[in-house]
Length: 153
Image (tube, rainbow, N blue to C red):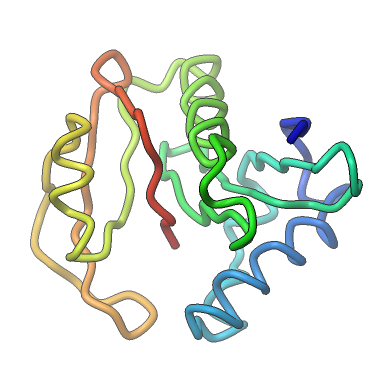
């Protein structure tokens, strides 16, 4: 499988970004549409992965200027490929280019151990987001080391 990883602007790639996120988060994971698409989309840096054979969008993720990594998703048929790791690596590179010292992710509770294995540490108390309990996990840029990825809303 060949694919192209792109850093894109929300305005230019909105339909393709929405296509992947609707499939994964709205349809599969039942995240309400108005929660999935928020005001951060317009200012965030987005990564969009396109399958070079079908020209279809297959993965996406975003990072805010404050270092929040979120909306990482891969269509179900491509989840065994390394494309998710490519999304995360690209988001981390965006953080480095923007001179961020750390990044964070609002993790589901079942993924806290996963992020802890990749040098992320819990910050603050558990909170509710989109009707689900979450734990903020943070990591200094220099310590990030992902070998596999985890879907992250």
